[in-house]
Structures are given as structure tokens and as C-alpha cells.
Amino acid sequence: MTSASGELAENLARVRERMNMAASRAGRPADEITLLAVSKTHSVRKIQNLYEAGVRHFGENRVQERESKLAHLSALPATWHLIGHLQKNKAARAAQLFDAIDSVDSAALAEKLDRARTNFPTGLADQIKTASESKQFVPGNRLRVLIEVKLDPEPAKSGIDGEGVQRLVEAIVRLPNLDLRGLMGVPPYFDDPEEARPHFRRLRELRDAVRAKMGAEILPVLSMGMSHDFEIAIEEGATEVRVGTALFGERERA
View 1 (cartoon, rainbow, N blue to C red):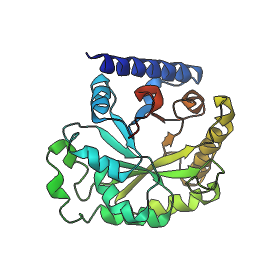
View 2: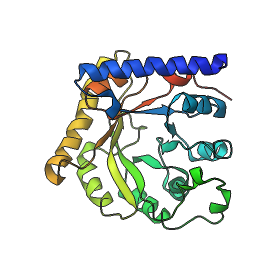
View 3: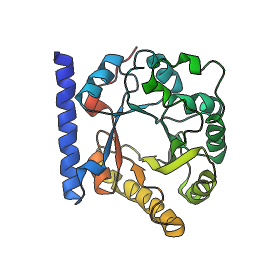
View 4: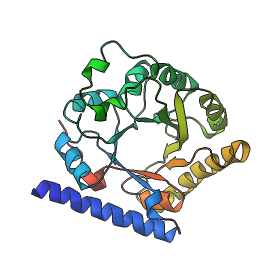
């Protein structure tokens, strides 16, 4: 084991321990919480090392970055999530490159993703070299999606307002090629992670309000919490946490 891979394994062990402790405080089994490694801007080698250490879910912010890493990671049977804002003009490409789109914020975007699962972009299938990658490209496979809810009031932040969640859920569940699994949200950054708690609680309450109208089985996934505040998110019901810096270290810059 190289020093770099050993450091990543140690980071992963620390994150797992933090997750276990938070789950214990909440009276929840830790194995019901998925760790999603935010691999944006990080090297292929680091991603491979974390996969070898046991991480199976990775999140990228941009379609282009996923494309640039595809050739180098084609043999890695990981689950790939798009966690950044998705422009509608890139929806078709994203629907073929990712196993999950965790940032759907409009019915128009959902409809484009739905159509993309039945229509291959020209030449795309030729780029897929292994069976492990081709699972994302089989027409007819339903694409897992989450609705991104706007928790940060900053105008530049993306997501649908809480008042629109119910309508968007009703629109997406009618689309045959999408599998709506839950909600995702990013609160404002606070130096004290405890201050994020009301935002995480609000996301859970929005999910519960939908369940009250549509049944207790809908929206099982709550994706919330990052490196500095995921313990609070777990205590408030997160089933997925998105962790970058605590796993990879500081982002690599060009």
C-alpha cells in the first residue's frame, strides 16, 4: 500500500467512525446510510484507491468531468451520481453517463432525462468498452433521480423551493423511465454545524409531508450532509451523505 492510498484508507476509516457514532446517537443502524464520495476535481488514482478501500458510490459535479474520467475508470463497477446543477441542454448526455441524477429541480429537466433513457445519443454506445460501464447505457433501464430542494436562500444556489416539491414529485412519478427515490439538499455553510440542523430537519419534514399524501414508501432517500456537518444530517434522518474533503483531502487545482 502506498502512502497516498494508506492516507485515503485512514480518512475513510475516520469518516466511517463518525458515521457510526452519529447513527448510534440517533438510534439508527449505520448500514442504512450510504457514503457517497465526492470525487469532483480529484484524480482517477484517488478514486481507484477509495474504491479498493470499500467505497462504491462516487459523485461528480459536471458532465464533462465524468466524460474525461470515463476511459480510465471503465473497469470500475462503481455507482456514479451527478450531484451538481444540470443544465437541460446536457440532460441527454448525463442520462447516459450516470447511474443517478441527484439534482433534478424542474419537470422540464425530468422530462428530458426521461426521453434520454429511450434514445441514445449518436455514437455513444461505441464509447462503452466493458459490461461494468454498459449498465448505465441500456435503453429501458430506469434512471434513479432525486429532487434537489433549495435550502440555501442565496440566489445563486440551485434547487426547487419547498412549496413546489409536491407538484414536482407528482410530475416525476408519471415518467416511465425515471425512478424517483428521494430528496437532496445543501444548507448554507455554518462554522458551527449545529446551525445546519433546522435545514436538514426541514428537508425531512418536506419528505414527510409528501408521504402523508402519497404513502409511507415514497421518497426513501434523504441525501444531505457533507464533510463538516454530516453527523447532524444523520441525526436528522439522512440516508446518504456526500463527503469530499474528509475523504480525499483538499481539492486538486489545475
